[in-house]
Amino acid sequence: MKIYANLKANLTRKSTKEYFETLNKNAENTTHEILVFPSSSSLQEKTYKNLKQGVQNFYPVENGSYTGEIALEQIHEFKIQDILIGHSERRMLLFENYDLIIKKFNFAKENDLNICFCIGESLAIRQKGEIKLKDFLNSQLDGIDLDYKKLSIAYEPVWAIGTGIVADENDIKQVLSFLKQKTNAPLLYGGSVNKSNIKSISKIKHCSGVLIGSASWKVEKFLDLIKEVS
Ligand code: PGA
Image (cartoon, rainbow, N blue to C red):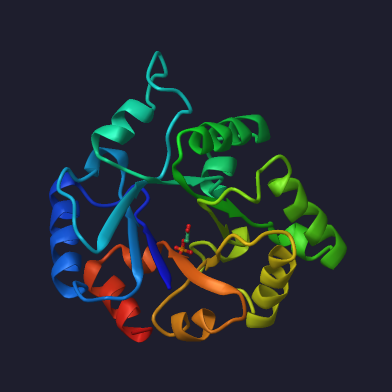
């Protein structure tokens, strides 16, 4: 199972290093795919055998005049192969639009990176019913190569992110089944995944993993979640 931790803008360089060391020591023999997305300033130089790190964000260029961004050159320096694209916080708080997201996707694909592509609807859209929901998810996938071999898709309803409200299992199942008709890419769920729901979420049809935010920020808590599904 894919168990991804999105640390967002949490932890310092020092505490991220401790996080990786503790995680590595305690999840050494895991059969799960553990991938951690630290903040860009906390990327780890050391590499671990059973523990990968990815970037939460990048600008789709080799390098250049893009103040505040990191680019391929910096990603390669850390031997990083995995990136997040389309997270709702970047879409909504950082105003990442469709054009930029497509540019990022195509650039990452050209450079053979593993892409975890995030999609998910707002509560207003969900309340409009199934057709509107599917239209919206289709629009977020429009222009994305769904046959790209290194793609995984994280379904993360916006209203479930960081709110403690987890989507109903049937709702998750319905969306994952819909996505499965469109792609063979592994599908993840994200949005208030925690110790008490990770096991049942992992058993949902077509669910290949989880993208975890707040419940992953303390390494002991994250390890508890891994244990729940081990
Ligand atoms: P959450 O965040 O687990 O805190 O809801 C998930 C995410 O943003 O990927």
